[in-house]
Image (tube, rainbow, N blue to C red):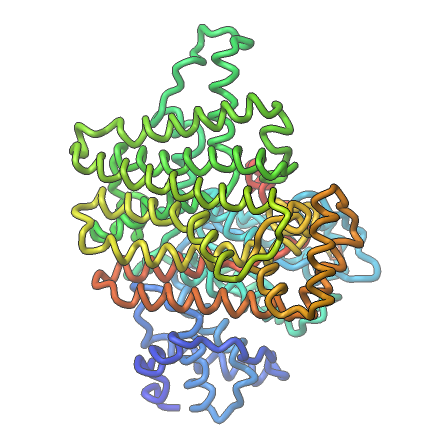
Length: 599
Ligand code: SF4
């Protein structure tokens, strides 16, 4: 094969990236000979790749199809080929990473299904190394070299481990279904990763090319000349500023010093607020502010952690946005009477409503204090512009939430999709807008970007909220232990609005009746299940997914118009990372894993 045949075709890539196909096929080549042949061609092809920046899954798909066409092979191997191209893209950077900074991630389905004596703990499968399957061999070799090892799977776990700062590269084994989901996020975030696909996706006693896994585990060479830009460093920075000791360094507590009595009420209250501020979550809002600022200042923070050049004043502004967000969660949980947040009881369940309201108020005040603190360094016009945007977001969020609460109290439960979307635009988008705006304004004048930011945030926020609604029927999504909470709480979701729009008169009457029953306290499984059925009959879930894609496409079209390549790339990354599909962690509970510092 001529390497020219598979030179990346940029025009095709651009067309594909506008309309990413979701239908590529995931067959692992049946023979070892064919797998090796494809890998060998990819090794040649990879010499043409520009490794300065990551590429998207759509780009990968085009490269894979070009390569398969040039080899006379069918597109059923597109998924396998994409994984192999990604492997070659990252190989040098994985093999330059110290063994002690690598994670070996294996799926539990590799175990010998019938006789495996291993138990599961919060970190996944605790392999006893009985020798009945290859897990023991891989684990032993990797641990001897200094790797951290997990027998678990799922992209959310991987990303949480990465942002925790304990590992810098991943060697993975997974089925093509899992790898396909992971590719987008891992490629876009710029996490060095190589993976070996399982030979089948049947989830039981699976097998893999074992020598290939060993080859990847043993990779070790000096650092390559080109290091791919990565958001990993800025993701870590956004986590760091929200956690101790950085949190107290940027925003020193004033009531809980060394000489304060532990039971002093001022100290206790302050600690409650700081603990809540430092608790869980993706830190996506402070990340947005830091990453936008970095992108408009040249993108040095995407090269490595040492190149991040962000002042404490900028970090405090990002922290302010997290404080507002955390305050709004406390108040939302009270208003919705939610029981759980970040896998544990909500603030008002733990402390009672009056204390929770007050902690929320404290965090609002702390946010404004943080945003205004560095006005002398940032310039009073910059601080005033950011404060205005924050206060504007605060008003809009309250409007959206207020409209939702009043609708819930009303007896007329009719709502149109347009009315629901208008509430979404107020409830969710302003926080994204404020985080984006703060990053832009901290980097310089914002006039050229202000309109774009508002439109982008609106589309992103609406898509995010619809995804949340779809996740409400997923018992495994981050905060949910019970499905159908939106229905039971009587929230005016766009799913409900779409169901009411197309329901037959009898179905509509039934839906409204079920909502009335929920309003009177019926939280039975049967009620939620029936609503679920009625939603399905009206194809609400597929329509919701289509709406998510529509608003995603709009956000991407807005990003396309941005001149700064670093900023545009970041906006695309935000679309992909914020609009992450809800995925059920399979075994380990990721938050506890990180919080315990075991990896
Ligand atoms: S080697 Fe480990 S994972 Fe495999 S069967 Fe034995 S205990 Fe289970």
